[in-house]
Image 1 (tube, one colour):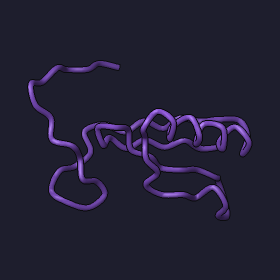
Image 2 (cartoon, one colour):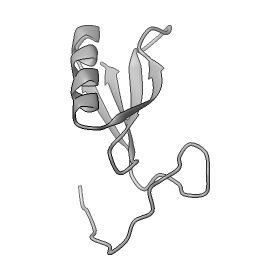
Image 3 (cartoon, rainbow, N blue to C red):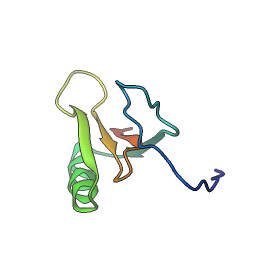
Image 4 (cartoon, rainbow, N blue to C red):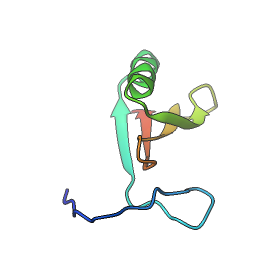
Length: 77
């Protein structure tokens, strides 16, 4: 991974709006229980839930935004 410093960053408005995502991480855990534990950790670290697919058919996952608004996913592998 490489990161670049900029003086000012507009928070992304993804998936809607004029400012697209500037990065996106996909992270995995080994169980639904681990997904729930990481959900609580994300919220404790001031992330926010954007979309919840933990109970749906197929691969359980959740989409979050970090405190700056960058989206990332946590899914059960």
